[in-house]
Amino acid sequence: MTDTLQLTQALIRRRSLTPDDAGCMEIVVERLEPLGFKAEWLNFGDTKNLWLRRGTANPLFVFLGHTDVVPSGPEDKWTSPPFEPAIRAGKLYGRGAADMKSGVAAMVVAAERFVAQHPDHRGSIALLLTSDEEGDASDGVVKVVEVLQGRQESIDWCLVGEPSSFDRLGDVIRVGRRGSLSGRLKVFGVQGHVAYPERVRNPILKFAPALDELAKEVWDEGNEFFPPTSFQVSNIHAGTGAENVAPGELAVLFNLRYSTELNEGIIKHRVGAILDKHGLDYELNWHSSGKPFLTQGQALVGAVQSALTEVLGAPARPDTGGGTSDGRFIAPTGAEVVELGPLNESIHKIDEHVPVEDLEKLAAVYQKVMQGLLL
Image 1 (tube, helix red, strand yellow):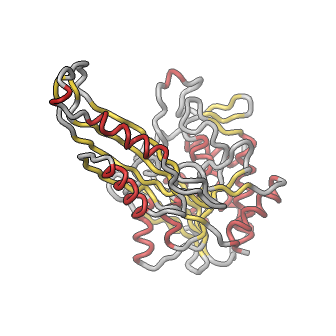
Image 2 (cartoon, rainbow, N blue to C red; image 1 turned 30 degrees about the vertical axis):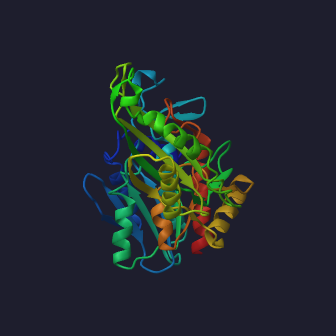
Image 3 (cartoon, rainbow, N blue to C red; image 1 turned 90 degrees about the vertical axis):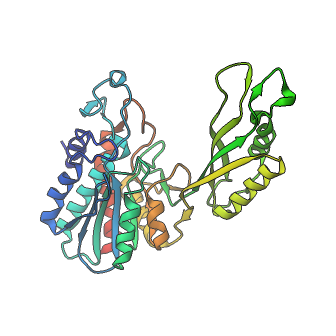
């Protein structure tokens, strides 16, 4: 059994549902402290955050990951218990196998091997782990970044172990992410009997033309790095449950995933203009999950592509798709950020899994990245 497989299994056995770390970070500390990594706990609320750093000099290379996982769903739907790692047909099964306990394990093993071979490497290596990535992330990496900035501890390169691969390990790397802006909209009307339409103001009917326009709006054309901005509605709710009552209020949840062609101010103005155009009586509250970012520096991307070519035989396709990650909190500090991890096909699903053979390959790629940057 390989080191990376053994560590991944140990982490899967910990039922670390957000924001419970369930002891995962202690396992990591036990392995890295003897190698000169200094452990610092930066906990906020119910969230555990671990900052492990070896060295004090610049440049600073950081592995970023999370130990929390999403709920398993009905455990009886799993072929084997979600928190008991199982190997079948060359695949390791368990909640967090892909997202992202295998990534964390590969980071730890890569750091162990790199330090053993190069104890006098230049600069510093750090590992940042949180137990609040799958939740609202309010007490996780965003808070750690505030601490680091407050003491002028700057990150040069950050490699995020999120599952980025599609068809094979290392075929895609994330060099940026779209911004995510959500709206909670309430449209107000006048409730009443449907048989007397002249006495009601139905917010569903009033909002329908505005929704159609929002859905058809061309927000931008994207650019060479980002797809066009998208608008999606995740929930619409109205009514009393009675078929003969027109509702007095409509609630809508929507989200825009946007490129670097836009910013929050432009989006808010354009959405508001459309709602006002249709004469709606409404209340709108916004929530930003992160601004778009793009890594255009050559050092980290170059080191990752060289490592992938050396270990796996081919470089990756740079991409900015997918959801958000904690990299959105690191990029605004000026750091170069790249996401590279295992296959993402089964993440958050029943019977989540990762190919066993990919575990050592991922650790080898991570090790080569450090060699390219710190030697």
